[in-house]
Length: 300
Image (cartoon, rainbow, N blue to C red; front, side):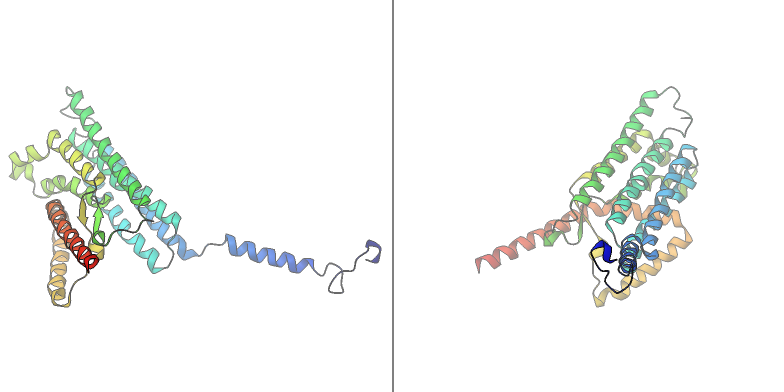
């Protein structure tokens, strides 16, 4: 090595190179490897998206009951993927973006097309052959609902880095996407489980009419895109004195879900619709109390 004008460190030829290569391999492995547990929440979110796409396919075939089951599966997966991510400490920006895209499919596109096909007599539009304007109007309202859901999710993503005011702690801005989906599908759930076509023909004719369905699409879409405060159960704490009644109510709800799943979900959807004005009144009181307390602290 003397003829090259330098001497290798370590006293042997090529002594420094194996160590540098080894360090490079370690760094590359550490940077490119992903723990298996980090993939689990994203897989659950992917299952939710697949369920939503399956619901779209089933709706286009007129298989509305199966499409409803697929949306329910998507709701369940959407409810547990974030909790799994926090449990495994595998939350990521990629997972958050994937969750928003899946929510648009599951709670925006899938229920919109469900309502479109259900209101217009299925894929063949049975009974609406001579009513092309009704079919197009139903499609327009379905698109409006889906775009409102898209806007709501985009606004939610932009607000993640903002610090909310204290009185917004227990409230959503607008109706959340899963809640809007079940509000929209509540008439179908109640009509089918109560066999309204046979037992309540007048009610069935009204609530399954295209006019009422389009009104629900517009109403629910505007609620999702609005800034109306709606209650968030995630931040609600139960006092010790109310724990037993809450547990008893939870057990009763579980029993009802097992006894008649779809009727119970329909009743919950109807109660959720009624809770919107109640949430607005509670928010107004909370905001008023906070502003009074702030003014009092400033004056002191």
